[in-house]
Amino acid sequence: MPALRLKDDLGRDVVLGREPMRIVSLVPSDTCSLVALGAEARVVGRTRFCHDALGAPEIGGTKDVDVDRVLALEPDLIIANQEENARPSLEKLAESRIPMFVSMPRRAADGVAHLARLARMLRVERERAVAELIKHGYTLLREPWPARIKVATLIWNEPLMTMNADTFGSDVLACGGADNAFGERLRLYPLAADLGKMTAVESVGRDVRYPRITLDELVARAPDVVLLPDEPYTWRDDEAAAIEARGLRVVRTSGKDLFWYGAWTIEAIPRVRDLVTNLGSTPSA
Image (cartoon, rainbow, N blue to C red):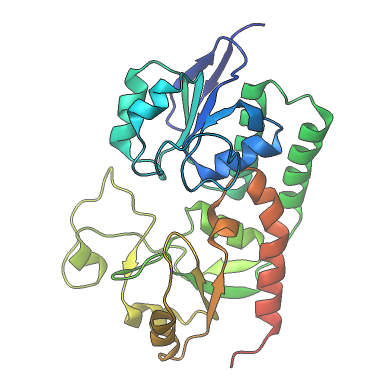
């Protein structure tokens, strides 16, 4: 079988000389996708946050990967994500010369495309069930779905953080009919500038997709709904109540449906569309 050469989302060439049979997944959504592609038995290492392939040993969390434990498992492929995994761990793993594929999808369609790349790496892209799953994902995303409501999605507290339109989660919501109230908002540096307290400094080379905001700015944007996903931050009832006290409608939702890419994206889009449809048809309290 000829070697397979792919570029990952960091622009690196990843060469697989043979079909990978020992895979370490550093990303919960990728572990989910591997199972969906019928490769659960190939997963020899996973994070403690992975809800799939539970028979595989844990190699730490997404941010605190135990590099030595990963190497001891002798994988022939490591699957990682630029946002979810800490850079020092990825750099150490890269030094091992073990093929490592690093993803960073920014659109819902990128999530489905990543699933297709995984299928190619596993050499299962021609299997009927796999091909139908991927085709269904693309068909689903091609369906026209007009905007119904304006939402602000909060992903962290103290300081409040949201996401702009150049993010995977925002695009998933857009595919569900939600317009991002902070779509054009860039993250400013330093924190005081983001909170409107000083002049921003140059941000070239920095990630500007996740702005830090004040509660006053959130109110000024006048979203129809403020979404509180259950990950990456777990919102307390009193924190949600403080937002509601400013006259905003708050709804809790699944963080996995917004941020998990790959096979989960295909399952999540109908749920997100139902969520947005229901929010748009339910009057504010």
